[in-house]
Amino acid sequence: MIQFISTNKAQSSMDLAIALFIFLLAILSFFIYSLNFSQETQENFDLLSYDGNIIMKSILSDGSPQEWNSNNVIKIGILSNNKINSTKLEQFYSLSVSDYQKTKTLFNTRFNYYFFLSEKISDEINGIGKPGTDKNNIQSNNLMKITKFTIYNDKPVTAYLYIWEWKKLFFIAQML
Image (cartoon, rainbow, N blue to C red; front, side):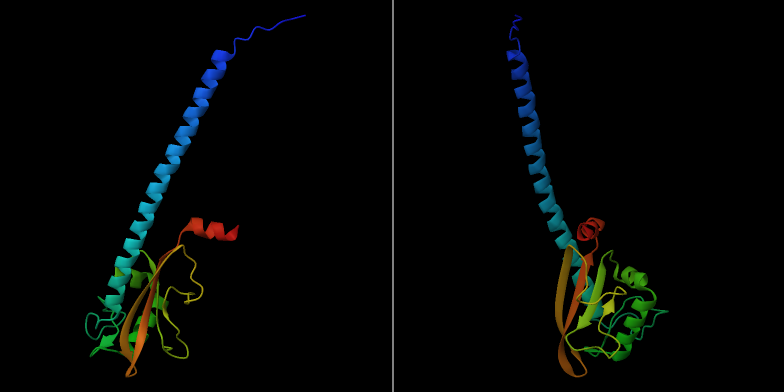
C-alpha cells in the first residue's frame, strides 16, 4: 500500500492568499467603477443641461442677424418682438431638414436636439430637430427636457427642447 505524505498545507495557504487577493482586487475595482460611473453620469447631466439651456436661449431669441436666413445665419432665433415669428420658425425647420449638422454647429453642441411647441406648429411640422425624430421615438440613455413659455399666434404656449446623447452601447443593449 502506498502512503502519501501531506505537504499541501503550505500550498493551500498560498492558494487561499491568492484567492483572497483576487477577491479584494475585484471588490476594489467595483467600488472605483461605481464612483467613476456616478461622476460620469453627473458630468453628462451637467453638459446636457448647459447645452440645452444655451440652445433654448438661442432659439427663443431674435437670432443674428435680425432677419436671418439659411445663407447668412450666425445665430438661430425664432422671435420678433418677443413673439414667435412664423417665418423664422419655418426657416429654422427648413435649415434643420436641409443641414441638421449646420444647426448643431450654430448651437455649438455635439448633442442631438428636438424642439417643439405645446401647440402644433403647422399641419406638416410637429417639431424641429434631428431628421426622423419626434417626441415619442427618441432612443437615448441620456435625455434632458428643457421647458420655456413664449407667445405663438398671440397665445401663450410652452416650448420644449429635448436634448440627448446617443450611445452605441445603449443601441446594442436595445437590440439584445
